[in-house]
Image (tube, rainbow, N blue to C red; front, side, top):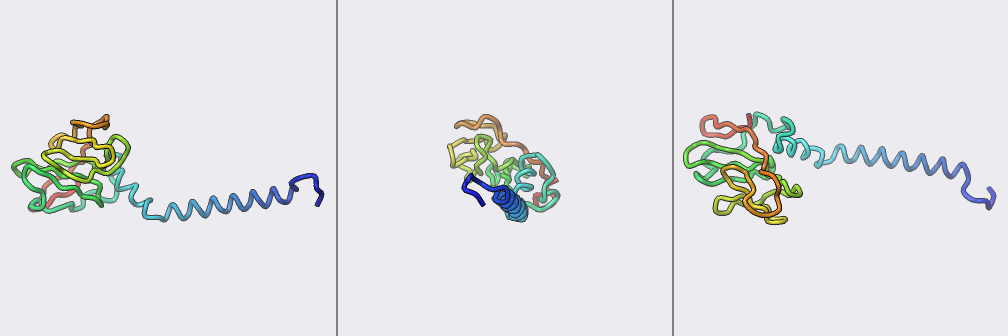
Amino acid sequence: MTDEGVSRRSILVGAAVTSAAGVAGYAVAASSDAAGAKSIRAAANGDGAGDAAGTRLAALADIPAGGGLILDEAGIVLARTDGDEVLAFSATCTHQGCTVTSIEDGVIVCPCHFSRFDLATGEPVSGPAPRPLPPVTVEVRGPDVFTS
């Protein structure tokens, strides 16, 4: 080897190592828990059926009349009218994608930048969120609520 700079061999070895690391990183990322969460978020945002399609979400009795329930794992907010009608929205804030965490006085609250959404419509009522929470189609079957 000469002192003139980088050899052809070292460039080829570096390229091979970089390629192998990229393939290994892709394999690890594809098999991680985050890969599964993406399909749930897609379902909650109305971008696809996801893994939760047609599954039981909650008991109707668990959703207070005139109130709501946040399902963290499913990424869905369930809202119940004073009767037995149930509406559902994505739990992903339309501002920067944070997950909403509470329901206070008829509004869904995002803790990141304090966007607030109307529980009955999903429309933003304050904060920086530019769009309503996307609706999720659900149905009440007997005593339970399911995705449809």
